[in-house]
Length: 271
View 1 (cartoon, rainbow, N blue to C red):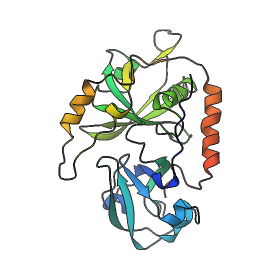
View 2: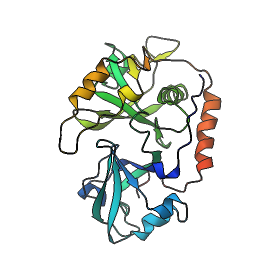
View 3: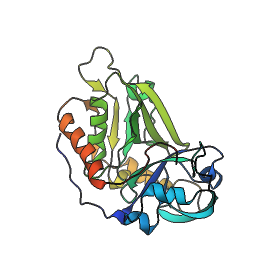
View 4: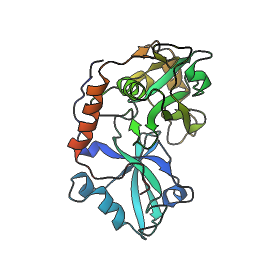
């Protein structure tokens, strides 16, 4: 399984993707959305003059304006929040985040294009063709692994996750165009004594299978864009048959890329 290298992104293209929002917390009250919204820190954080954690601490017990990037609208917005006090069990902002490139997030996902009956994808994950996108996954007690990763395509990352965790409990982060974000928790188990793990669905990624986009003035999904996606075969994978190949080396590279960024942040803990 070869690696598809990408041109490194500039720090200004990164933000902190919201994976969890505490109900009735500061970000929840301001209308921020899980999976869709990225917190865009000020220049001092981007330039590494201060850490993200120090910036979060500086917001404690203040009414502040936070800049967000909305993946659904492909635009920036500002929200005003009353931050919690430092030490609050729900965090200063009331969210769990992960450092990601927001400009690539619309393409670095897997679009479900068909689902086989009586498959793992159908019976365990309840995946729906042309409605669902796999965004990320998490093994119990480990950090979230986003498919939006610098230097790798999303299918390579999903292969890595599954190959290294057959028999383990896993949580998939899924976005549905009709019902929004959901998580699907299950155990990765082979079925019918198969030598390989078979997910049982077709997927696609790339420009013609990107995360859904809606207009600012419209609360409905852009149906024309979705129909175009339905007719596209770009970068389509006919079935995910997982087999172990270069996963040890790939896993090392994923971990090393995190170290090289030298970004101090809290992954999944509440900020």
